[in-house]
Amino acid sequence: MTAAQTDLPAEFLEMPEGLRIDRPEVADGAALWRIAKDSGTLDLNSSYSYLLWCRDFAGTSVVARDTADPDGLPVGFVTGYVRPERPDTLLVWQVAVDASHRGRGLAAALLDGLTARVARERTVSGVETTITPGNIASERLFTSFAARHGARVEREVLFGSGNFPNGPDGPHDPEVLYRIGPLSL
Image 1 (cartoon, helix red, strand yellow):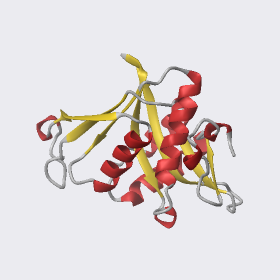
Image 2 (cartoon, rainbow, N blue to C red):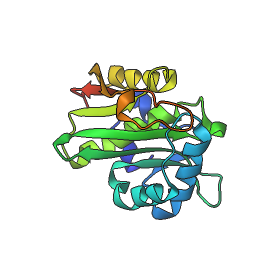
Image 3 (cartoon, rainbow, N blue to C red):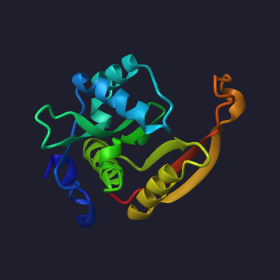
Image 4 (tube, rainbow, N blue to C red):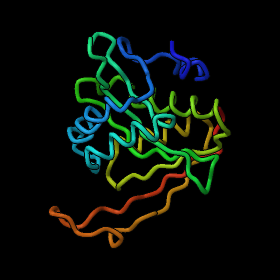
């Protein structure tokens, strides 16, 4: 068990077998980019941004590593940051799990682990994220997170389609802000 898992409710203490939670390192940036690209649902950022994320926001992000992999490459991640104007709010930027590790509760374990770790370092009363309509997996992940932590979920459109430039696939879907809190950690 890692330090990030020690504050979790008992039923969420264990990562799926053979995996461990860890802090991302710059060397993980390329793997995070690949996992995001292969997810098929996330907006893919530049590979450079994942390198910067691993350098500058490692304290508010986590990766899962396969203990059987001698290289210890990430197989899942959650990236986030503390909102400068709301220092008690953790904004979750992206959650992704490699296809070979999906369906094992890894995303939920990573989200719980990250929130517990950040809460040990500062007051965290809420989590925010944005989800595009129709992303059922993310909706379930965050509503179940709220239920586990005795929190309400408020939803509102943060960025409408008109806020985004049209891409090669047409207009961007709106991004709905999920405001989860107050948390019972």
